[in-house]
Amino acid sequence: VLNKNKDVIASAVTNLDLHDISRAAKTYGVKTFYMVTPLRDQMDLVARVVAHWTEGSGSVYNPKRRQALELIQVQETLDAVVHHIRNRSDNKKTPKTVVTSARQKAGNLSFAGFRKLLKTGNPYLLVFGTAWGLSDNIIAEADYVLAPLKGTTGYNHLSVRSAAAVIFDRLLGRLDDSNVT
Amino acid sequence: VLNKNKDVIASAVTNLDLHDISRAAKTYGVKTFYMVTPLRDQMDLVARVVAHWTEGSGSVYNPKRRQALELIQVQETLDAVVHHIRNRSDNKKTPKTVVTSARQKAGNLSFAGFRKLLKTGNPYLLVFGTAWGLSDNIIAEADYVLAPLKGTTGYNHLSVRSAAAVIFDRLLGRLDDSNVT
Image (cartoon, rainbow over all chains, first blue to last red; front, side, top):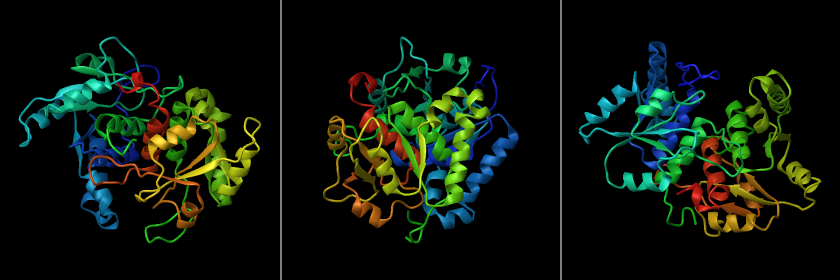
């Protein structure tokens, strides 16, 4: 991901990203939440946090939290995630990658377009970046770039936790029934 | 709010609630984010955090964060919030209160119904609870109870940060099609 000065960095994992994004993933039926970091100590830390809530005392204290954090898989690279998805017993297909970006571009995949793709049953890997967003090479190598999430003002700085929840709701929430009407 | 055992408590303020909810509020044009706590030390703490980002070194380090956290007003009670809104120079009307709840009930205000109300230009105060949700008396005294936010699974445990972002998007972010298609 990028830092404030547009350098490519590995960001530190934010504990509440693990909780909020896994809870949103569980709410909307996302199969797996892959947390990707090349930093070995961060990988270990995430594994410890997840184990606390899925196997440790946290799992007894709050079983609802266990159901969410069980969706987390830690991986070192995006390539490893693609490989992991391809080798799932429920799958055996290479996922298409869809990256999120705050920049509007010609050729962006629309939310409606992505909803249509999801109905095919093929696997999709939706990629969010922390810090100042995904690096250019990650965006360049993706199959699709999702249209930026806009509100109603010019302000375009949601947290990755908020953006993930809203994007799940737009892509997977029931747009046609009593839930939104 | 309620704790895990349904006792009425005052919860501790979560720092990322201040950041995430104010950023979502700014994105969707919410006028003010009132943080309500009866605990004097928590009120002081929130004021200090907000001042750091709106006036202190945080405002220079990240001006975008300043624009969001400027929306935060700390109040001791919900009544004080209603009073504050009634006395705004841009308003002079008593706001209707709309509470959020995970329980589906007859008489819930639908998202479409709330969107219609918002178009009247009258002030509305949308109330979110931390911990295990708003207490019964807060819900009983509200003008409306918003329909629960549901995903596509039975799992219904979004963080308040995620719920606020999705609800803002449903109420305020989908007024024109280009934004969701």
